[in-house]
Amino acid sequence: MKGFTLIELLVVVLIIGILASVALPQYQKAVLKSRTAEAWVNLKNLNMAGNAYCLENPSGTAYREDLAVDVQDSKNFIYGGSAACWNNDVYFHAGYRNSPSFLLYLHPKTGRRSCEGNGCKDIGFTKSTSDSNICVCAVGPASCYYAD
Image 1 (tube, helix red, strand yellow):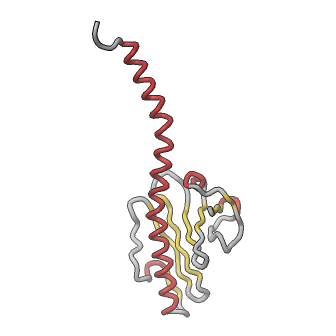
Image 2: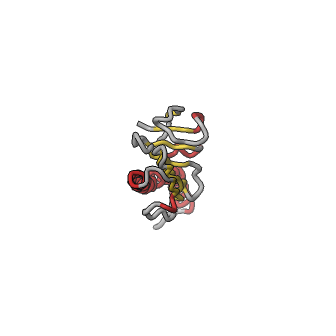
Image 3: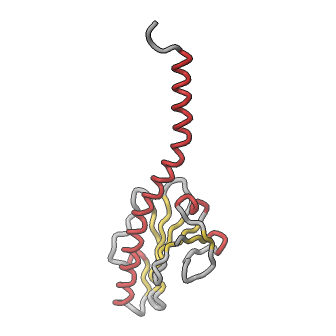
């Protein structure tokens, strides 16, 4: 007799299903981490543009619409922030467009990366802090994370 029996076929399908259920969450986390690389590049460019604006306009106030930089929302992230030039308070944040709930911040003076929200641990942020030199998060130390 040639071919597979129904039991053999079901066993193979079951094994493939188990392997897929183990691999899929790890794959989704890897995709999420890779997409945040886009946000870090854009946040760095936004902060540089904000700092440049404040060097040219030290006494005024500018919000993101006033900056000479494209801050259109991307496929994966929604950007926001401000450049308050009277005290060089230039910061921007990126929020993920889909289900993970987190905001990414790039500290304008130190360049440290920080994250606010429940989804931070999914992209490698584990250390909580209330140090304003590390985090520019709005809510507080319980939800402000950073990574080395």
